[in-house]
Image (spheres, rainbow, N blue to C red):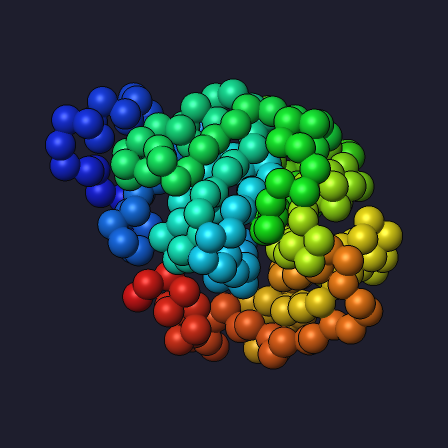
Length: 255
């Protein structure tokens, strides 16, 4: 994904000092990012490919950060609308400017608000699809980053996995789909709690950095009101032995 500035006065006006505009390599979409805040990573790209939004469906991304998932999902799928919920106003503002940069104000809506109050903000059974790339670390696990935006993105400081799953269970319509990327070390907890909040685990795919290394990401799909039965998909391998991306990874990045 290239870091080239967009052409035209509109794009220049939307990008502030210290920020950059990154080419997402799909339908000309771009995103505004700041190295001083949390920039999207591979997990967002993998989640956008693992998820699916059918024609006419409404999708919500919880904790959208600077809006990477709504922008990627809109480019990949023909849903009717895409919404991102973000508690940090500076990140939400960057997401709105990225939406404007792409001319997608009619399709993508960024809302500033708390995941813990998401069902109150949008109303019950408002979406067919929910995506989330939540903070992976519990409380004080790992090193605390002095950058508040980075800390909130990586740690369950402002919401927990219970908050995410509880609100998702309320927000999804019956048979609505929940997509999440997380870390395998929390997999037993994730599967148990998904089922407990009515989001029956239906698909799982483990992501391995190399074919002979243990997985460091897991992609999960849950079905609101689904029956117990889960499909385990073949593992996704990120790198070849020589350190280059595998063919599947290159395809996901539009190469």
